[in-house]
Amino acid sequence: MAKITFVTSDNDTIITEATTGSVMELAVQNKVKGIDGDCGGVCSCATCHVHVEPAFWDKVGAPSQLESDMLEFDDNVSEYSRLCCQIDVSDAIDGVVLNVAK
Amino acid sequence: MSTETSNKICVVIGASHAGVNFAFALRKEGWEGDIILFDRDPEFPYHRPPLSKAYLTSEEGTQQDLLFPKQNYETDKITLKLGKIISSINRKEKSVTVSDGSVQKYDKLVLTTGARPFIPPIKGLNSAKNVFAMRTAEDALNIRKSLNKDHNKVIIIGGGYIGLETAASLSKLGASVTVLEREERVLSRVTAPEMSTYFKELHHKHGVSVLSNKNVTSINFDNNINEVQCDDNSSYKADIIIVGVGIKVNTELAEEAGLEIENGIKVDANCKTNDPNIYALGDCTFHFNPHYKKYIRLESVQNAVDQAKIAAKSICGKAVAYDSIPWFWSDQYDVKLQMVGLSQGYNQTIKRIETDRDNCQSVWYFKDDELLAVDAINNAKAYMLGIRFIQKNQKIDKLKLSDVSIAITPTSYI
Image (cartoon, rainbow over all chains, first blue to last red; front, side, top):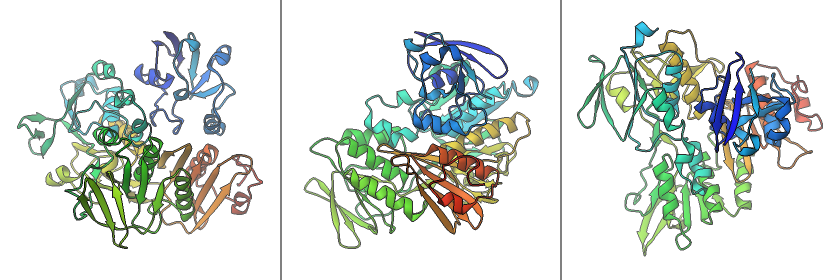
């Protein structure tokens, strides 16, 4: 079981728990504002952009080439940007905090 | 809002991408009354794009690919009536009749009836064995069940995205696949010749035969195998036949109810039909695209989701108007194709093959100086930049764009 915290652009904090699936699916399930996941999780729409809280970056890990290409020209990109459909829920990411991009 | 909608009923016909996303969006926008979705498909609503891709090759089934988890329907009080066919819309009474004879009243009705596979009138098709379309979870499951090592010759009629994706997936499962395309090249309706050549070669490299100018005229089932006959006198043996030659829009209910139809159900910028209490969304709509300044019909998940959000806001009294640049994607083998814009009417293409990466290309479609569309192969940068340029009507320096020594950045070609 992994505890994952989302902080929306309105500063709402949503604490969730899950064991499987993607972080995007978890966000949609919990109605996290700003995470749409329109393409269903195949890294095609960039509607699930989060900034990983820097302290947890190593836990979450870096994006793939495709994912970083999707993000590179985004106006709100940061060095901690990820598309959360590409992050799998597992014990390895227990405790992470993700800030939803504007 | 609460006083306005708490006693009201919104009925949705069609519980796929458009209908389901609409239902959740409507709740989010503040609708407090009932939301009831009908669909003839008995499966719990699922993502369609994976059917021809990951779903065919995985063991997990659509339960892994639900549009929304089951509990979200409960928490948002969205009622699903699956396996139910609507037989008519009664606009005067503001009700729909279900094929079992029951009647459901509505205050707002939303048509997300989508489309169904077009089955061409090929002689012998009805008596052929193991003929499938590829639109529903049932189709994908049946295809997977029919395929085994003694029963692995597959003919796919139609070289569009559905046909090519299905070919890639089935060949991965060990099938011997041949695609028969009627036109002189695959994907001819949607892409430039460069792209058709690229995908034909990609399939050949993976052992899938992609043949053009193959007009199927008849199918003969004999000796426990189908024989597919083309008008150039060639013929192909098939254990399994998959028909992917396009769709037919499900407009019949709307038409019988007297709604305006023109290459789909005609809607305004709020997705409203000519009846103020009836909206239509998704594949079934004929709608105006402000960027391309023309009426279009789109077969895409993005359009379904975008229109769902617009209609939900509009029904809840919020001012919005549809204004999207269309985008699409296709996965075949290890290739990711991403497309943005509408290329119809182009008179020039610029092809870039990036030299610093393997198998990374893009085709840029222009009409004179206007960038209309970009097709990107394993090149999300070109895709994302294409979205930005098209949205802004950015004028592009074509000479620089043609020069692959100039890397793709937001300012390289301005």
